Image (cartoon, rainbow, N blue to C red; front, side, top):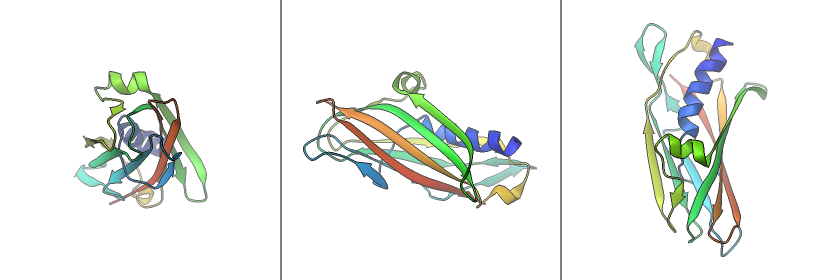
Length: 156
């Protein structure tokens, strides 16, 4: 149960931002589109002391369709080996903005957000075995919905 809290913490930081690179991009020609990327992938955990680790990463969001877009939701699903869902989190645009991040992207624009969350990891066997899917939803200036997903793993 504690590993769930650790991974959720990492994903909260991931989803509190927006980013870009096409893993699973859904778009309509002539409308806005988004792409997301986590750098590095896998995220490399660095030991701070004892069971405390830092998880430095950057989230990149790109508008790829040539229209302004507004991020409406970011969600994350953490899965264990075998596809067992460990956690789900979701953040709407208002919550993302309350964290100090812009939810607007200009045509072909890019946003980058750096994070270095610290979490306690009670069992090192979690490294390399858990993955997360990050999904970003946006809407362009015509009301067309665009989405993108990416998968990230964590290693030591």
